[in-house]
Length: 242
Image 1 (cartoon, one colour):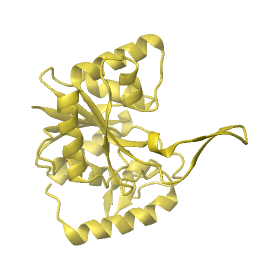
Image 2: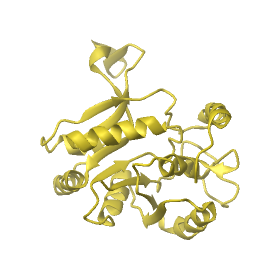
Image 3: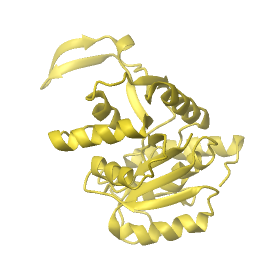
């Protein structure tokens, strides 16, 4: 079974508001330093450490490709980590990466560049689930009460036991994901995640593998303090292979 991970990392990260010191002028959160390494590198290391993963493809802005290729080469990863040029949106970046995959790829996992705390066990579980069902995502059950609103008025209280908050990685059969992106392109449909594209095909039911609230998406400056805490806890318990 060949598993490829796609990491869309072409976003501008405008909510973060400041850049990585080693790349002048950049304001993208995936390049911000966390314990002297860009967040993106921490994320890649998680998938390099997973035995089920064969290669990692990172979709980047064109003007970041040369810099990122040098960065990745200096990491001496034990698995193939290559880059492709991304698009103006996450969806276009993933589609560009999909076009670069060989047909012998079985499963594709798509993961946010700024979720560096996904646990190896969770990666393995969602990959194995997708291998059986064709489509699987990571999600967590909300702990807060969720309200449906219109403007600033409550319209309904939604039952939490029927809701999940989706995370990544999201894993799909290659042929299924390619069909989903082709259909979305024809219909001019823009989804908020890859699962929403696959759901529209109505070919398979998307399975949910429970994740943890530690799998945070670093999107704003206040997230960095929590990220440093999580990284210190990880460093105290394990050493990831490169």
